[in-house]
Length: 374
Image 1 (cartoon, rainbow, N blue to C red):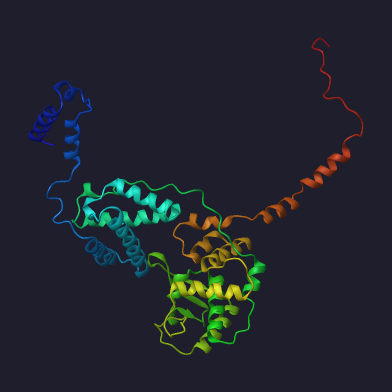
Image 2 (cartoon, rainbow, N blue to C red):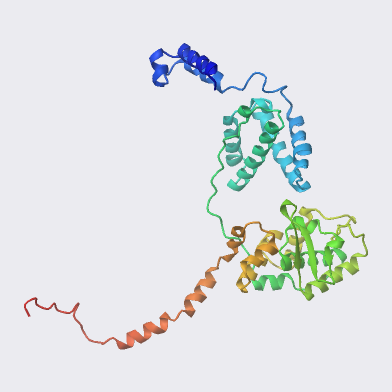
């Protein structure tokens, strides 16, 4: 601050505190100081042009800010859902205050509500926090909110518990899962084809749902998908998978290049939830009692490749992971793997040889010490 502002600030301090307290930086517990602190931390009176409605603010964020950043439609839909749920909480729990009237304490209460009432885990809480931070940061960046009015500006990320190892299906379960069932309908062939493709390529359910006809190259035996962040990658597959895809294409019929490869019963594309339902249906018909999902097939794909000795960097590229740390979780080993490794260790044979050399007589605890004068 310049000299004039410095003099004005000192005069303001001396008006609130006693001269000695202002000079030595003491903070007295007084109503005057509390009022001074409230005024100093409050945003300027002209910080916001108007107290915008939640509907306007959310639409402004998803339609202008997120679109300008090039976010995918699925990401924008998830943001809209998270903000919509928070807006409903504000309506019923916070007297429907506007975006500029929220306090960090309100956010603490909201996350406690998600944790205790909605039973959300830490990962879900951090996802909601990430969305709300992006929302309020965008309002500040677009000039509709002052920085001091951002209730999540300094909100810390919640510490997540130790990451659990992914649950996967065994090779025996996968063999039973992908055994050619009695397929008497086009939908049955489609469901089996989806399960085969998910396990053989490790793609996500959303990537499978958005797979188009031109993305499936049966001649070169490869598919091209658009992953998170709009990153495109190409994944090869084997001849057996090609035969399965070709069979489905024949019974499905011809479609345009930009049409969805997997079709619903109504003739349109399939949603992400429809892909999940398809996998669960195939698992039940295969007699697998455990819960099977597209993401569990993705975990199984990566884990089985690691067990076969595949390089982690290669698996990272196939899965579309930006960071190799996301792929390293598949380096886990099962309890059975540990038992097999212990059984193969040569220490058992060595112990047997040592036992054969030990005399079967009483022996002293230690050798007698030699005299220092000997």
